[in-house]
Length: 373
Image 1 (cartoon, rainbow, N blue to C red):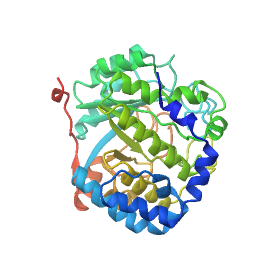
Image 2 (image 1 turned 60 degrees about the horizontal axis):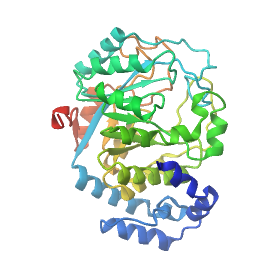
Image 3 (image 1 turned 90 degrees about the vertical axis):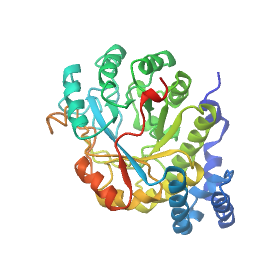
Image 4 (image 1 turned 180 degrees about the horizontal axis):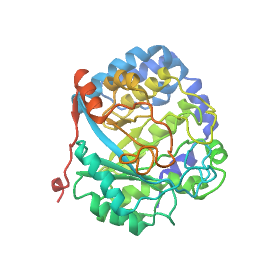
């Protein structure tokens, strides 16, 4: 059975790099004309190129227009709920790295329900269950029980946990989960192996094929993305767009979402190898919108409040708010080790107020499972 692995290995990474860095202004203008006419952009590598840098204002205007036409003036809000910070991996950039000396905790089902209740009272109806990747500490059966309890009060429950096989994803769906989020971190295989020196996550291919397994299992939403700062953002942007296009075409019943997480300070003091500036982040978001007009684009609390407010009109459709990145963080802040430091520390109500102030509508719920049942 074919997967995105076949597409990935059919390309030569070095040749793609030459294509992007060798793109001309003519290539960029051709791509922009396609986007403005609502046509499919075949040469979308040009939108990630250095030649596109001087056309950022035009890209931003087009991105804004396309997003408003496709999605209206809404910004969906969600919250992550961290279940555990215990992990079997040694990801160099992550606070949950098994070698880091942090306070480890895995919440009980009852503690998770209390955390979820706090988020419910704040208005959230879309929730993302997040954990370190440790099957022994958080087995599939426990995750299924958590999901079956949580989804009674939430319209949409997604997971961002360890990769699973197709049958396991199907079990999560039957337990009330409708969304899968799994980041490849970087599509540069050499860099990937360097920053994942040990643990199950070192298997590049198993992770890269996870969205395929989720698509075959039947998730309503599939979210992907690269961890910006690990490798060259232009190439990771290109491969993310390629991956998203493949998923959109192959699993057309699933709504594809793309996130843009930039590396943030975390336990271990990892040095960012390829920093991404604010302007480059905007460039990446706008390019992605032109290439994928129907994809959901997600911006998290990793980014500062002022930047999130300014980027919001350019293509973003979903934002997190009031996030805590440690298990139990909503009821007991600073009680356990964090995955990373958040930058936007506003409350959910403050984020919603800012969204309104900028002319958009904060949406706490835009889906209900009764639509399909």
